[in-house]
Length: 113
Length: 116
Image 1 (cartoon, helix red, strand yellow):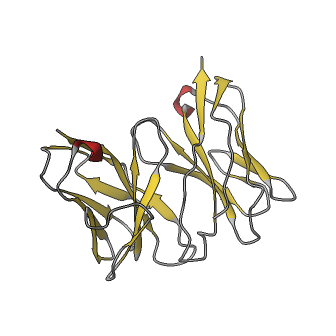
Image 2 (cartoon, helix red, strand yellow):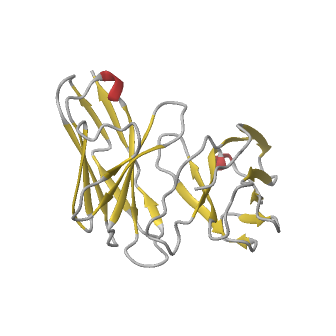
């Protein structure tokens, strides 16, 4: 599984968009980009995933660069409840029984009033 | 969405005893379950992959005789920490992979183990 690099921490003002970057320069063609978050002392929560097209759901948007070497998770209107550690993971998990999710250090997002 | 439960949510045990943690997929079947542990201020570390009806596959550096994994059915995997010591105190998280495509993975809420 390809490795990812994320900034260790970020701050965001409540109500503003939070843009969390992730570098995955060694990603291979069949690997997906996943984003999970973990609120303190809870299990990880799935946010979104994508292969090469931009994706949007009710929680967030995922922008993947054309060369797929980096991506950005966008929380359009951050709230205090979005304060969490955000993990970007690259894996060939989907459609392949052999894949697994390996967590890096993630980005600790603090949403401030 | 799919739900994964863990039991117990918190457990305190004495050094030298064994403790069992259960992981259940409540509304789907999972041939594969994963066990992670997480120390304070650190990321999740994959310990092992548990496959229904077969032996678990442990990640490098994880003692298979200390962390016994059983995956006897498509909805239940157990992790037994044998002869627990204070350094085994951690947050243990399981996840379960859906039986069919696209094989999505869902996480449990975690179990806080404290060994005194």
